[in-house]
Length: 165
Image (cartoon, rainbow, N blue to C red; front, top):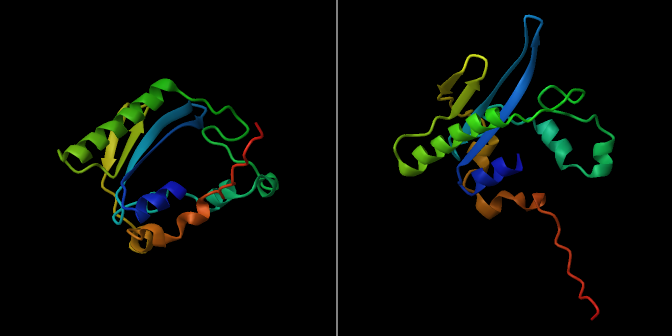
């Protein structure tokens, strides 16, 4: 959430990746895949893509004391199961992201807004999702720079105490 807001405020494209292993059904015990989202400030962001849960983000930004009072959240198979990191899966999604970065920076083509990799089927689908017309991040924060008030996310700087020689 913080990175998405900074990206929009300073008009810097953001490429976000995710991989996951999903529990399945008895006939298919699991599925796996991932996605790449290219967030272009003012056009489409992670909020438009429904990829950020503001309540979970709020919990992540809370102090450890407040966070200890809340339920812990996991990823992948859930907080009660293992949360594996699969090198091959991560590599596929990372390479998709690198390709979108290259075509965007070279101008070969516009990047896909969303690429989805379905591991069991071995397919990648592209979608040209549209931004939400009422998106706060795209419509209000975009281009605001220092005026966006994002300093609230920065940790206070503690003065360095000189050491005694």
